[in-house]
Image (spheres, rainbow, N blue to C red):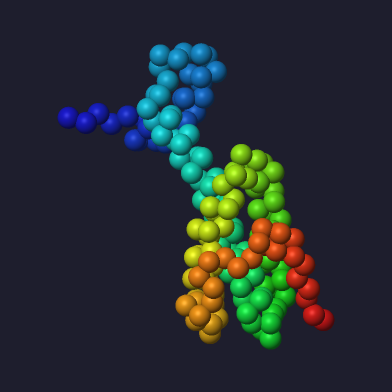
Length: 146
């Protein structure tokens, strides 16, 4: 018979209880198994956040590059915002920097999907691996024509 735990009933209450136990150094009462699972999940969320933002950025860079006639203020500011948010995310999580090349590779597919959803372009006709260097992804200026 499975026992229902505080972790299963009320996650927030469980987190608060774990904090209390850790602060009181009551190690034998800490829910180690679930705490490990949650810490692992938090690390995965940080990588996912990076990939998600990169996917949006790469999709908009593709749109910007392959549809110059359709460039818009919205695309310009999406590129700007995602670059800033990725920069901040990496500054807050510097150990993610070695993961960046892999994240770019994975996120590029999301970028292609974004292009497929939002433009008449056929993603199958675009490069199937990221054509942008890290410098181009993060530093290449995009100019909004007035």
